[in-house]
Length: 280
Ligand code: ADP
Ligand code: MG
Image (cartoon, rainbow, N blue to C red; front, top):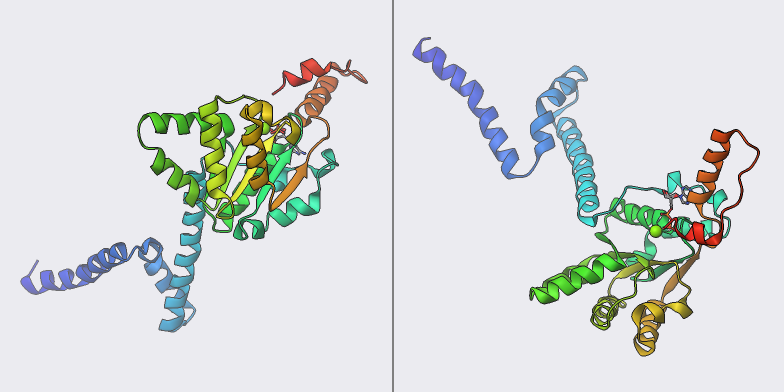
């Protein structure tokens, strides 16, 4: 290769390498990946330079939004991904569907209000909580999902390791905190105090969603202290949307249906309440 040929090939390669570096530094990965393809398409369509750039900008923004939603979903630490699309409202007639759909629009999160889903096991409380959390991630809100027992455990561990402040700060800054399954496990006095602090610090500063199998008048059995439970309910229920889910267990109903199909019988003997409770 002659010197002149070599310098020509260098000038052809160099701008692309430089462009790649600049786009990386500017954090425009979709630009970097798509600009050649979109250039060819734009040439074919006789699109001018502004239109070419516009197409690239649009692609970058769409991709960036998708990446942001994915990041928020990852950070939320959902146990599963569930959406309202797969929730059968007809199976849970006690649930206020218009309210759930309204909550999925996330204005309550913007207004730093609370939501409490109450009902026995298997009625879809976690499903709805996950779905509202997912909707919040899609609408641009940061979310943290945890069970009450795991949160108390995490708070106690953080306290023992002298990093409670950092954890509290994280719990205070998320736009939506979801605390699932309050009521299955009673807390120690320290655990109750720590959880109370979380709710208390979030009061009117961030939205909180709690699910519980216990009606409010039984929450004292979880927190131990009547005074603490009263103060907590006072804060949590000040600006609150209550989702009553008092129907049958969906798990139980689907298990029964499957059993019926398998056995090809018209019906199976109903299970006792004790057995149903073991379904948690
Ligand atoms: P809970 O938290 O009230 O105990 P879950 O939300 O865990 O109940 O529901 C148990 C299972 O049944 C989950 O797999 C959930 O997706 C499903 N489920 C419950 N209710 C419904 C419903 N109405 N439509 C579709 N799936 C449901
Ligand atoms: Mg649940």
